[in-house]
Image (tube, rainbow, N blue to C red; front, side, top):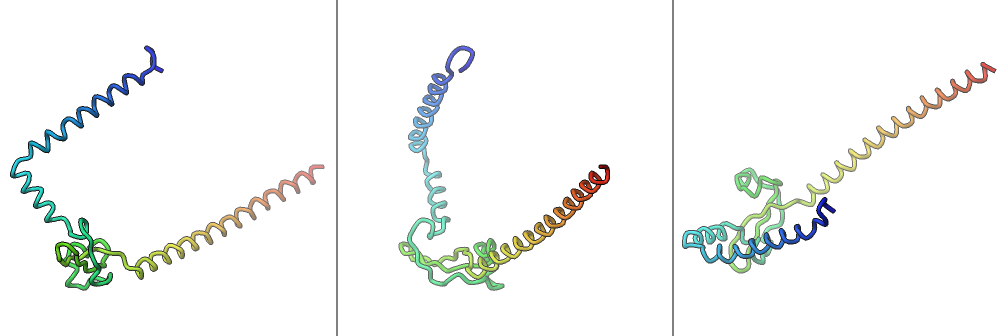
Length: 147
């Protein structure tokens, strides 16, 4: 609650005004699209990979890129590609993929690293416990000697 009363009516009015403004501009912007905008949109749709907008079949399973294929942009992210055949456009394209063998190797590296970290911290805990036990025994011994 603000100094002049509840603030929610102002917020609601502000959100309603922004929503009406946003909804009001969309149809006008779409109607104002010129021929150059339509051509740009057509080029954008043509540049979109077919497997993003239509059904496809995997023509070649996920394999590691050869030295020749490494020039393909899809090969760079993972080092593996698969060949895709799009149903509607009948185009063949390449798609970056993740190999099961690569995933398994990464998983076991992670598991091995975590096991090593766990062993290191377990050793640290045991050493710390021994130090604390030694200090407690020394303290008890000093108390007994003072009696």
